Length: 175
Ligand code: RBF
Image (cartoon, rainbow, N blue to C red; front, side, top):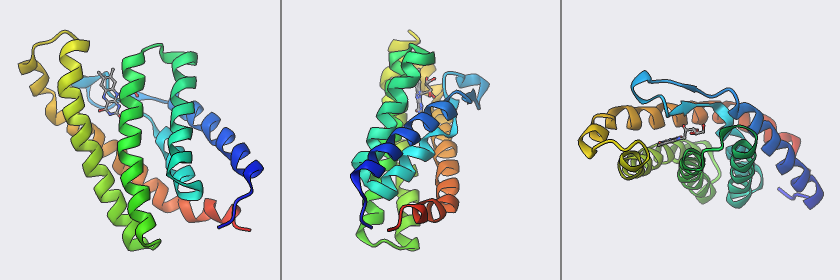
């Protein structure tokens, strides 16, 4: 797919703005770990990654997180965790899809992406939560099922929505 750079830059801008808006819909899934908030905004970086490439996906994610930090959150730790989760999901999905651009590799990508983000964020939370919330490590361990469950649910939903939308949206950009 050939992409003209003005279209690419404009689309990245629109996708970043839309993603920022979607992030405002955030809500907690588990009352026991209410700092973990679900929002559907990571679908846009993923779409950008499929259409333009992995680095453009990361760019949409970064712009979304910076804008959300400035407009609403003000919490650099939460934003950094959101970014870390987005990247550790997006990169495996896109790089696996690029091995063979077909439905099978797309699905393998989603499965590996969900496993990678769940593993990475579980470890990261074990390191960050005791410092961020000033709770002992044993208390943090009790949150482990919620942290793993949260990431698995969030990124499975993103995968399903992306799988349903991706081709229709990518078609708009075909020359
Ligand atoms: N977002 C994720 O998608 N996965 C995570 O594992 C995750 N862990 C977080 C841990 C802490 C301590 C905080 C403060 C936030 C975390 N977030 C995570 C981001 C959170 O869900 C939300 O998107 C941001 O806090 C912005 O409101």
